[in-house]
Image 1 (cartoon, rainbow, N blue to C red):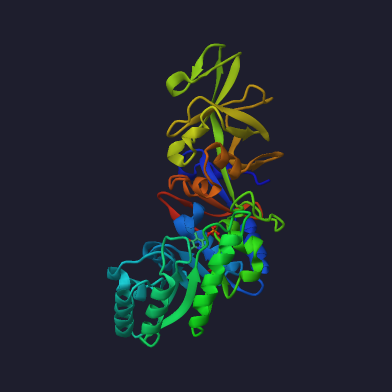
Image 2: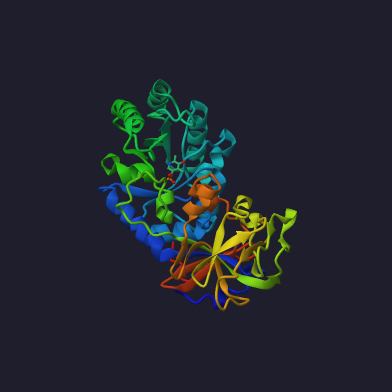
Length: 398
Ligand SMILES: *Cc1c(COP(=O)(O)O)cnc(C)c1O
């Protein structure tokens, strides 16, 4: 395990997220191997599921991803400004007023109206470029996308609207992470029926992480894994035969140790009372950092590889852990809130379960004020803090 002493001072507070770029590269390659020859668009929306979009985008491309996928134009612009040149698919809705910006940024938007197509074509012809777009079929998620008839008529009406190039056709599954795949197959069948009507659209894609793990045979031309590249499984039901490696670890250090007498209470509302002479560690991480408040009196942290229960309410900026049973505990000892430490492990899924949510939400919720520290072979290769931007020593050329 890497020594962490040189992380102190990141952001001025002993709290940081360690992002394992070796694990990330391993996951990208493992998922590509699963995709039977399809290209891979790494989904880096929502600040790369909390991991830091710019560093992650560089690292996944270096690891073999061909494309990036985001939800909105701002996320695409952030990556372009950081110098990333790969194709970037904007999978969400973009307003017509963003047409010129999309063209100038060389983004690949998802188009769902004739008006948007016309606006993009006009801007692209002024800029003198071809403008690739994708179309999204709503095959049963009932969220974003066009219904089969709408999609086919839009596609046919813009097929020759140069310099627009209808490059891709995709859909998104409603329940790929569940055991019962019958609705996935129903959606896939509908997708193929529409795709057959539009054989001139070259890139067809449907797979998120769950369907890539469970149904690799439907990878088509491109796969779009998100959670999997971060080393997490979309649900407990998916096939875990492909071993993914968690990328994210949330770390801190004990800021203070306090001895409490039996009967003394900890934190707001005095919800925890020391049952015995207790040793309480102060940890500088709270719900303002993305540590859910519902872990109050339920979660735990790792110190010296052992579990210490979180006692009292998690505050905005701090929480407290009962370290009475951990021998030799000392101020400045490393604390792991999410991830592994020696023989100990607090997977993000455990936290999600305690909070009645999914691993995605916990990772996306890690706040911007938590510094991201990028690791390769156990060494720091870059970092990003609230004030510093990404300093990417050897994170890899884009
Ligand atoms: C977020 C998203 C993905 C990635 O999903 P994972 O479950 O994280 O693999 C793929 N496609 C679309 C359209 C998405 O919005």
